Image (cartoon, rainbow, N blue to C red):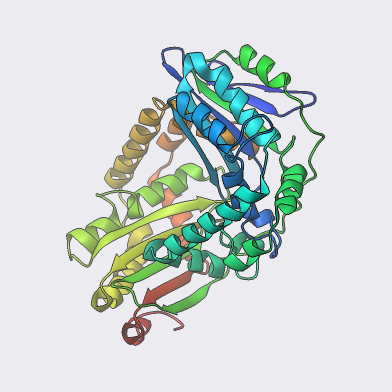
Length: 418
């Protein structure tokens, strides 16, 4: 680790504190990361982690929900949070002179939340409305169905939002018990990036009253499933999703995976965008992305197209993938390397982006800097990339197709095993 870039301190009775000093910045981004997500829930608890994300904005021991909102707005920056399958994060972006006040609010929200029962009754309805919004958004609904099938019968495949039925059984006391079980060191990390001094940050965090240590998650190892999932839904468009096995979050093969994804569907010059959209006009939205967890990962293609073009898109996506490794050339790989370098270097200017990057320290013992990753990206050659892609193509895959019922038969004729 480059100490001029990242500093860290493990508190004896608290969390790991990680910071990236950006002396020329005018702001500081602060985050509290908790190593818990939807895959740590039981079926009866489905959605409780995301529910807590909402409820920690509903007041603290000293501030009611309205007072907390006023204080957060008065800081003038961004207050937000996210819940994923393995991680929860609460973060603020403020002017550098306000970082202590911001950190105090964040700590109170996470360590001393009020969790008022009346607010939970209202917020549960808000989250159910959020579920309805996802249900009305074809891309999001299909992806939820796809991930559930990709990890069939496993907690990691549960929707992050849960279900109306599961949330209906969650009480205020359940929220408090779940928070008390998981939201404590060593499952917590404090991250800051921007105009901030690491020693001052550590001193501020050390003054908090930290609860006793959390238990190990004991996560069941994820297993990726293949096959074909066909969903009849009255959409204007057909939604196609294809996943291949990918890599884990700490994989040494990240540079190969990033370059392969950039070439396949990572931008306007990618194979999928060029072949499906630009040359044939078959779809407006087509691309690929990597999803990496601690013990598994996927490489996923998504495409939204008209039902009459869906079969052609299935064929073309398969063709693009099949010929990808053998058709690679140095010029294309060099272009992808350059695109990734631009993204990484430009991201170094983002105070908030750098703070979120530090959260990855929960996954691995050592964080590389973006420039160190760029050096590794530069060493990836065509042969190495061909081998990595070939290994992915040799494994199983899962197709999900969602379209009006009348169109499904024609699409299924183009799918393997359908």
